Amino acid sequence: MSSDGTPGRKRSAKVRSSVSGLEIEVLREAGDWESSTDETVRRAAEHAYAVARGDESAELCIVLGDDALVAKLNKAYRGKEGPTNVLSFPAAEMPDTGAPEAVFGGATPLLGDVVLARETIAREALDQNKKFADHLSHLTVHGVLHLLGHDHMEDVDADEMEALERDILEDLGIADPYGADHPGQ
Image (cartoon, rainbow, N blue to C red):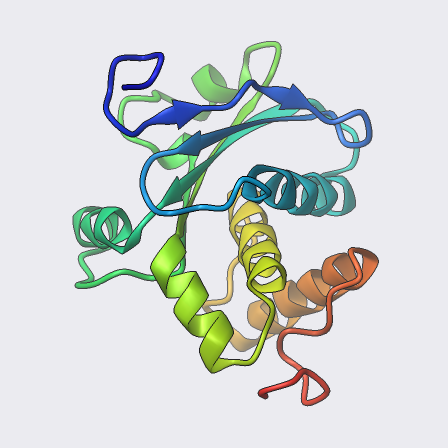
């Protein structure tokens, strides 16, 4: 039983980055996540935010889940069956948050939630011959960029988002996840 009374749920302390001004809470909702995961996702999220937004104060939650949780959310919010690797829920689009002014009018703007699926990420990393931590970092960066308004619906937007992801990941010492130079690609 966790501190909030729900089985299996563990909240980390909110940690504010000294670099980006981003406050991150990691919520272990489901899945068999390694102890180092919190630091991996925090580092990726902080750097993505710092590069894409700068040092403005903001807050986000990273939810560490499993395929069952993500499949449920994917069905409920996107109308799609099955799990996916990452889902992003921008605060301004979340149910019951009110108008964007209500979300962003406070002292610390709430960006939203990034939800990660442990089994899908592990399966993809194995299939693509990537290190799990590198793939997890990439998907965290991808999710944070979605919270900041980036998308990949149009080719030009996808190219821009992928270029930003590449730059952020390169800064973190992670190989280009889209390039031919990446093992398994």
